[in-house]
Image (tube, rainbow, N blue to C red; front, side, top):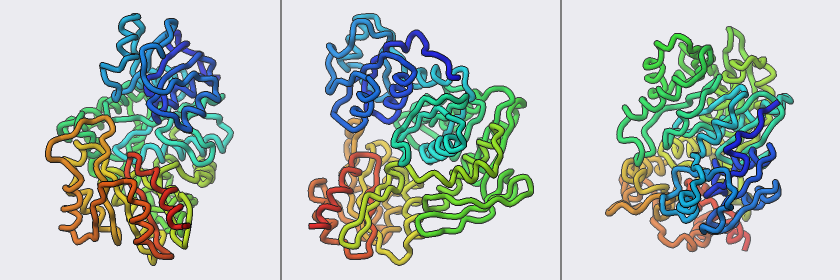
Length: 464
């Protein structure tokens, strides 16, 4: 049922093909029959998964990796102008396509559902992908993380629905024309691209304005930024707005969230009827994500009770409070949280799931610009843990900013009364944590960088 491949994407070359967003688009194109190639900086499980689909993956970046017959070069905002493959593309006059334009092209002709917000996008998109698949609707989907169940971040489905995570970080979500859009929250982040909340609101207004006439915006009734956005877009006459949350004014009202260990039970009021279902991950923020997914599915015309049951089949996304294992009576869990709101939500979720356990956190700040703007709030969030160690900043795509180090977070955490220690040698962390942890403790590796690699190493040290 899905449309074919646009001519420009018949033989695409992806620079940074192993990235979460890029690999998903590459997978869908390969599944549709395109001749896909690309490069990445290092070997990975993602590279192997792409090769299994017939994709040519080069390791390292070199001009010779770009085939002369490439129909386009696909890039993300993280690719620098001096990348040798990008330079070679200019020499060959090969068109350069941003990944958001490639994704938008794949969504054409389908009923698209785009999930946006400062945080929670990956989880909510995943819940929808799992639920719609469970209902045999065969959706296509592109997600910024790997599902625990299918074990992939993207798939080409035979149905007419395409679910996509919509990234606001570089304004690329403005390229989509969804039938249904979810906005989970609106907060200031991505400080290298947005100078103020006003710029954030303008960007989200543009995104909402791209919803097709007669389409639906599903948006939080509780989060202040989302409430403000509703006021700003209320004059779009062709737009249906459905709010969800605990507010008495919410169209889909969250009546109660009941923790059940590492799951929760949520009851909503929808159309004057009560509906109760299970969310197989802990924390009220994940329960709210599930309600947003429910409301969006209903907007597509899917019965609420069917959706509610199917959402319960969602078991998580890698790096979103993912249990990595247990050793010596200590559970090690991985969290992608890197914004203070996310950090607080995940720490509170773990407190609720295991109130008697001692919570130890290994936190790796992500981006110099984010630390500069939000380092104090990150430190304050760490006060929710019993003890924390803080690594150096993971730079990702950024160059260092003079004077901006993880010391900002450590000082703020100590000022908030937290037990926190700076550890600059990442390789020392497994031994440090093994020396701190006692049977019954929970260890949380937290951050959007390579801190995730430490989970198995910590388990090894605990086992020895």
